[in-house]
Image (tube, rainbow over all chains, first blue to last red; front, side, top):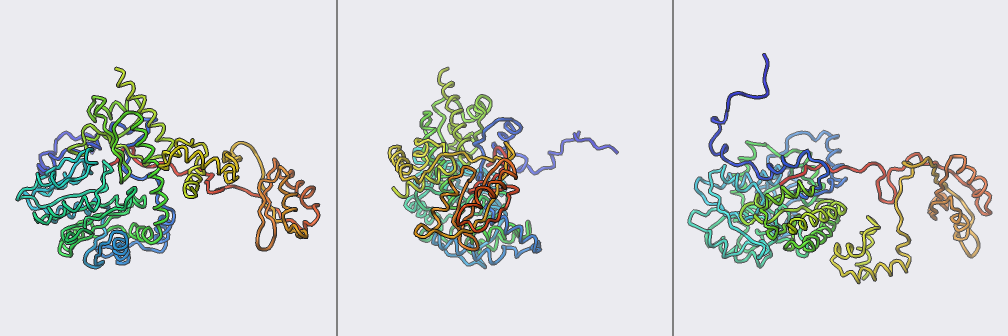
Length: 398
Length: 162
């Protein structure tokens, strides 16, 4: 029997319409466009340029040598959960019970999936400030929820305002998804920014999924967890992880904390789907929390230096760029060039050999912007800025 | 100013060619302040030199040895006078005063093994007050002054990710 790589029969009819009709990620499309190209400087990478600190890697290696290769409790190693709880308490003034209020997950992504699946009933409206990370909306759709995007703008530094939120709340509103510091905009929310949001959440009996994966990456002011606002702890699921703060993206280590009723429900999905997060990752995460803060601070300082460089670079080029106060992305406006985000990004690759992600893939308010990660070397950043500068100048000459 | 100086040093240690303008941008300081701080650091001899870190093993055959030297200190001048007599030789890369079993650690570079050996026997050992020497040849340099000499970890990230 010979098997052929190309199937003759379409199998698409077997798929559930919901999955079939979800569009593939716009990032994926762009990835296909640039992959394989040579000499491209990529500002499109959503992860740190540092390797995981050596002591963290070493801890995982040692654990493997010692035979830590078995299942852990569903919600993760107790020692790690205790450390997560201590860390959250010391840094963000939120207190959790490591036994009933924490699950160690496979990346923050799994935590988001668990939360949305556990909470959404068909027809529920899920409020999502945009532009935002790309997975909230498809998972909402998969769970039968209705996505209600709320546009945020550069004028407000991409903060969620109470007016914008209020305008979108209906009796069907169930959840609000917050992602601050924001991927892709670098926007943050202060305690004062959050206060009126918390009031609306209370008034309209909403639950909040607060994706705080970039909590450690803020510049100038410390991150505020939405759960630390008065009355918000029970209503908030805090999602975070190790990927960004400790340069551990490939380990897929995240966690979620919240009310024991919600956590218990999410734990059921977690135990039936993945059982537990990989043990070697959990050992590494524990080491990162216990001994990784100094190295984390060094990485932070380095991002901050490059943040200043890229923002000034874009402004010198003549592109409006709001000052990102968190994460490691700049989100300049390219509207003055007259091109759409997609056109700009595609031509930037073709004509200037620089990859950035078109803003429209991040939802409402993203059009007219490109996302540029500055987690890349200073030499590369300067070269990329030079190339973008020449590209924009050529555009404006025509 | 002290804090700014330390932050400038951290940057220049990584890349001495970073110009004052870029340093100022990266540190969120004014160009004038950065230039003044660098000028002071140079005047104070905190910044001693802007030199390239070179992996000589890739360009030519050279031999480096670490030599433990025991000496009797000189009355009134301690170890400094003898250290000076040693470090003034151009073959000597570095000299450290050490605690422990010996007094000076001397790094000597030469084109061949013989050249280094003859430096030890003809120059170093005959110095008055040098009691003994113990020569260790370096076979391979992995890391020096915080810089890894082997090929660095490459960027293994995908070009685009969410």
